[in-house]
Length: 397
Picture: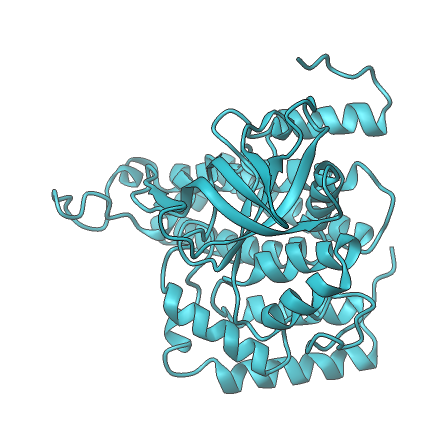
């Protein structure tokens, strides 16, 4: 595989690095490393202001293909998008609160939306002014998304949405939610679904309840819709499954490489802990640390190999299986490195603060979910078996 950055890419890298150095100051510098997995709830207001800073600098919407800056964004080549993502991660810039709108909704509107929808929503995303959340999973329809029960009934030019979504990241901060709902009650499973855009500021019609996790934090939420108004349907009524699957295919790509830079930082922290506590003297632990490092390198090469590739139905599932298992093993390894001391928190527990955990303990607890959220390992293996290997489909009721 030959993947090289050209002179133009390196010039872009210098621009990105200098901009980040000049703007990650003051309150933004205090957000360094915050807002990632396990701390998505931290510094929400400051990170929202950071989104507007990014928008003013023209750093939102680099990957919106075919737009040529038509919506207030600037575009960049695929390698330049990788450069920006790498520099952003290396600068330990705050976790993005606008990534769902920028990286999921915007490409979906470009592929399936109409021009009026693009003109309404893309400029606000590019300016960092409107934040989005994703209304897919439900209590009885997580990995089996086609079994959802949220319904939307026609009401004039729009719809009234009723039902419940769960595991919704950033629902408390979002201005809008894209919701997959059933608009045809006679349709079974993936038939009769529609992809709706719902404003979150509807008192009495939308309720957000944070979900407290075993780590003591609340990155996810339940969202209850009680006749909430949805004025936009993307791709037409009944096309929701096609649009939703198109969106899921966009969850992988450049973002995978960014994620791996974060993984490398976490691995370095675990290695550092092994050095400090003397665990490196254990040949088994030392072998496991080397294996984690080697597997991370392989994941990077695989991500670069598939970057920008189209038509590979199995690539997103393979990527999810690779990083989900790797990250979970890293969390387990962090606790093995600590030994018995892993059971001790950094401070005595009290009724007021029962979850005083350090970074590696939060890593371990959060990574228990890695093989479940975003599509469980079992679902990913089914996708590979059916869509890539051509094996008989699993009977679904």
